[in-house]
Amino acid sequence: MEQKSGLREDQRETGQSLISFLTSAGVGSRRHCFQLLTTGKVLVNNEVVLRSSTPVHPDADVVTVEGQRVYLVSRKIYLKLNKPAGVISTTSDDRGRPTIMDLVPQPFRDMRLFPVGRLDANTTGLLLLTNDGNLANRLTHPRFEVEKEYHVELDDTLTPSQQKALMEGVTINGQQTAPAQLRQLAQKDEAWYSIIVHEGRKRHIRLMCMAVGRIVRTLKRVRIHNLRLGQLPLGKVEELSLKELEDLLAVVYDQSAAG
Image (cartoon, rainbow, N blue to C red; front, top):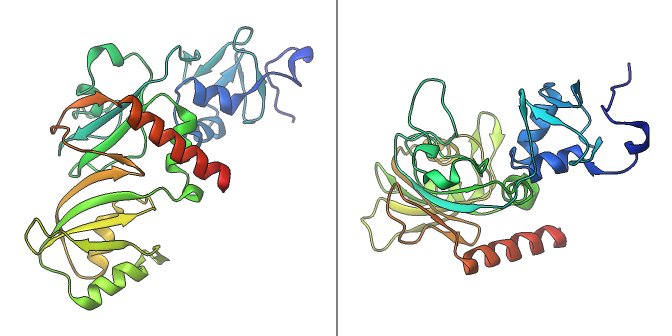
């Protein structure tokens, strides 16, 4: 049976695509919004809609996600957070654990923010929060190969063969990783390294190091593309400066256009 769109006949061929509306409304990244659509959690005018290309008119159509009406956001927000260990990289947690939203200042908590990518509970460092779904997609989609840099403390120094393996790619759960960029951090002791990757698999850095026989003791993300953690204190949140935002948008959108 053909999936109904929930729209009047005169609206079917015009309007904003549903996936574009959802990301613009700050529901999440394109990948997250696609998951919501495919699982039947998105309704347009009280009808389940599965097609991402379904046209919608924000002024005429009622779009709900998991029972909550969704509106276009009036202001796009870009925050960076220095996530502490023990904090979950989600906006809510049914087990009552502390989440990143507990660290976000109150004025921003109703702006439909979501994290761009995640850090596991024991990893600290840079996390970008926004309600700009299009930017989130460009920062997380594998085809854009966005760099993430981590400072890593290992249980021992890497041998030349271990370094070579990481820089050429290792096998994790039967899949070959892309090569990593690796350098020893001169300002720290010998077991500290900078590792740069452009993949975002779960526990990626920890598993890569385990694959060459090393254990990660400390893991901190310090950069996403050209956005740096800088001197932001642990547990603190701040809006991106105008220069940080302009530089990030320029590089990301130039790269996506070139690709």
